[in-house]
Amino acid sequence: MNKRGLYLLFAGIGGTIGGLLPGLWGGNDLSGWGIVLSMAGGFIGLWLAYKISN
Image 1: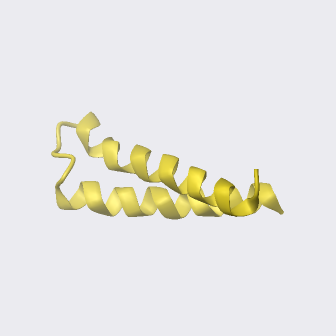
Image 2: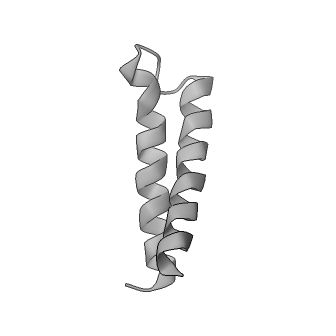
């Protein structure tokens, strides 16, 4: 897998996990927290992909 594919995969997984986190404590997935945590999860996924690829 090339680096671009790895970045997309990890960003997608991180964003999905981050977006689903508010549902664990009874929040709405489309709330402000859902969007913020989805973005944070995507950035964390990108960071992890960078660390793994280098």
